[in-house]
Image (cartoon, rainbow, N blue to C red; front, side, top):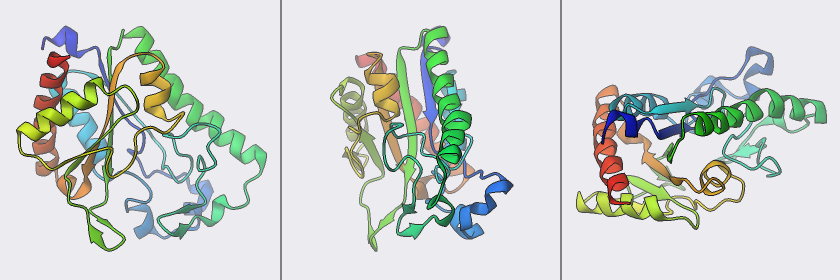
Length: 232
């Protein structure tokens, strides 16, 4: 693919950061919890930036922890500001005032989605790819996939990516470990509604536990994405 064509790809990472302003006092959580998968998608920020460089593409990353507000939810979703995550109660989110909620929506959620909307419009984006990571262990059992490709009813890009990954004998899940058809999520809002080729790629976070591993995954995803886009 040419440099010009790659510029029409937009990578996004809703849960790239575990940043919580000091005024929120860690939302009542311990530091080790804020450095874990419950607060952000481990390894995804570096993955997004590395992959963007390899693809010569645009990227946008979420700058706040999803424990403050989940950027990959519809604004009316009851889990938009989570009160419990992975059986951990987020005490500072239990009794928020309407003012507090509206402030988070205005200052974090709306600004993030406006950035995506503007980037799509001004860069004539044709392909939208969301990057996430998932924990290897769920309910004391190890997940047996390395990648999960999440999709809604528009499966054009997702199907191509799954095919490309299976060619490489990779352990890939189709709408695993999560479903990708949540009404109002980022892919719905910016991909499906704009008729863009779009997909959400989940990477098991033990594959992103070092810069070397992240680079390896970035190179792999570059090849998979380029081949998949060329097939459409």
